[in-house]
Image (cartoon, rainbow, N blue to C red; front, side):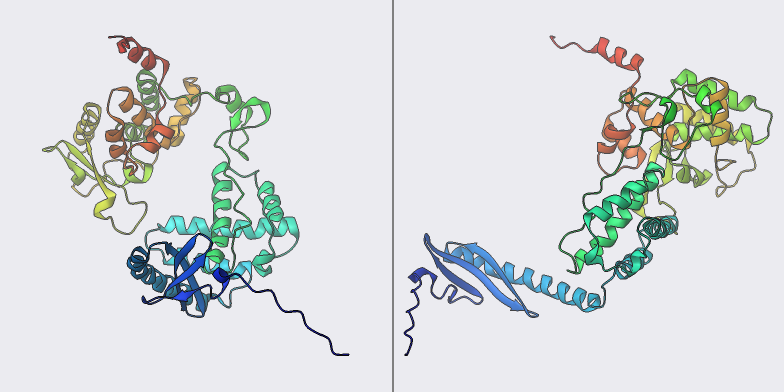
Length: 414
């Protein structure tokens, strides 16, 4: 017996021939319940690109040209990236791609490149210690969010900076896979940075993996959670410098001068070590600072000019007097660091905590803002490019005396 087939239900008229060509190239009209909608539709390198361009024909006709130009660029980029990424499968393949991009980046300092290599090596060793397998041989599409979270939790014993940079490098490898279309989303996207201060045993705040010895615990009084980081007052800083000069060891005198140079300029350690006598311009009363972070040569964007303040002028005059036979290319500082001597002085003077080189940069910005210098100006002196956002977030630490001083000058009703 012959079976009879049921007739297929007819589609509504607006669903038939969804994309209807128009007079414009690559512009199609699609009839919907609410009327016609115009779309751009084109095929490039085996992939179809579609975009909604509006409900007005003239408007869509004008937008199609710009959209086609963007599609050509996207298709060319995807084609070139896909040709080089077809053989990339494992996490190690994309790790090698990331390392190659780091090595070819001329904007990175050599120390930064070396540090990122160290972060990659740390990922390899810690992953093998947890999962007993080589992550380089693992297909990147098989790595799960739970595995990434387990790995990140196992390295929280490192210093905070080490942890954050290692996790950031871990994410960068997955971003390489996303860039070539091998992954749609990163399984490590949920990993978060951790704060600078964490509580360790004894109620003392410090960085993970940085135990304090009994003498340091007795000498240091670290702030509790939520309190501002302590920085010396001008009187305390002068006492620290005087204490550094009182030590009989030879380099301690030069270390005291170097501490003043850092505090009166707000320079980073590498910037202070590059300061030379030819950078001092007494006629314009300014100091040229090379802010290039370890690069082979400085660029115009890496140079900034710092006005010579009264304290800095007094220091430079004293250093000039101590070095009558100096040459323009000679370095201003006689030593390259002062951390040990300065921290020894902080402990001898029973300061709340020991200072580091970068703390003097914070101290400079704090005193400048407290003295009434506008935040954008201080930000330019420090070499920041954000107009003062980082300064307000990280560097500014007012003391109580300064707060009371400004509170007395403030009159809200007059």
